[in-house]
Length: 179
Image: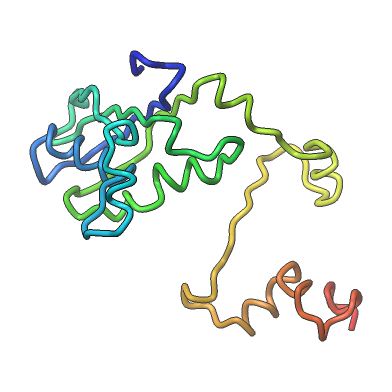
């Protein structure tokens, strides 16, 4: 764990390498925080040391060739308070397509208690969500299927009643196939 456990989120990534481990750890830290492959106008804002993710430890995976765990600390200033989505998107949003590695997997995530306290949670609790969905005894998973990923919008709407709620031409009955 990072020595500054109250001001940094700590992440362990399992790396399968094409490049030296120290270079890979530093590259993943940069790519998943403020680094980028091109020059952008915000470089002056984000090129400060206080915003950079840092690889602080690398351990070889016992019994595996070219596999390591890279531990990276991220300053909490990178993340919006109360937004798990923002934090996860910042840490893993772009790094899994990183070409300098054969493979990458998130192994460990440690979030400082002070930051966890900024998450408000559901406004009415998980039981209400489970009752609405009639789903019990298993995890609930939410995701967005985007039409740009190969599903045409009309086909997506016909398969997903939730997305049809935003279509002004549909009524309440057509949402559930009663029309």
